[in-house]
Image (tube, rainbow, N blue to C red):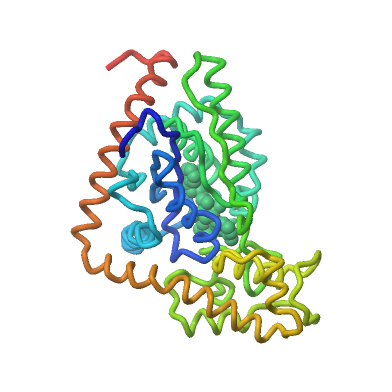
Length: 334
Ligand code: ATP
Ligand code: LTN
């Protein structure tokens, strides 16, 4: 990373809780790559967040390495950005505790992701699931990140991060930057293909609700052909047409065409033609990602060397800030 002083800092993360979906790509990772030249970027695989729901250990290890390869395949350049694994950098856990003691139970109780996930995993409403946003705040504040590129579902967690940072600064003296979200104007919430009122989510059991970024062309086309739409047949973005709006958004993002251009292109054509075109455009857009991912997975030593370098740099940067936070909170210097 060059010119660290001058450039603004970006940090983001993704959980290795399964194969990445088109939603993860469009809402987050695609933008990570785009922002690399203009910012000092840190991108991490949030394996500590992933264990807030039950994970099979061997599978989690595999998913973590695959997730790392996937962000690189999507364009994160480990030579240019700091790409690391969250559990390898102990400062996150250290800051987490300090911030937890400055976060209210009531604040965490209001988090909609906690409400959704505790309903979904009613047999395991663990303390980590509840304090998940505190660890996320630690991830961000440990680097004094200015900007956090995420999908819209993370907005509430970012607002809480700002509140925690502000409270800490008021109690102990200025230290933390209040981060802003970078939520893409289009594609910040890609919807499920089988139920377009629900977010496309990588932990959804229904394979047909998600397009995975590593799906092959035939699978992608088949999933789009089956996508739930409505009984209308006109390709127009409109209130209440969640399914077709979602497909228009996806097509627009992967082709770079405006919504108006998409509507014009399919004027007089039916949903069948449109779904096929969306499937083909997405498959073509993702083909190089799949190819690069397969190449990277053949060279694990390279991936290991990349994350080790990322881990070290991340630790160095965050240690400075976390030590200051510990000092301000009244811990004796080491
Ligand atoms: P899980 O299902 O395990 O909760 P997820 O698919 O929601 O996972 P996360 O790891 O929580 O994915 O999110 C990674 C990033 O992808 C976040 O920035 C999140 O906002 C973004 N994201 C997730 N789903 C979507 C979606 N459907 N549309 C746009 N962005 C999304
Ligand atoms: N909670 C995030 C993943 C995540 C994250 C972060 C994103 C963990 N730590 C820090 C941005 C910044 C999610 O996407 N579900």
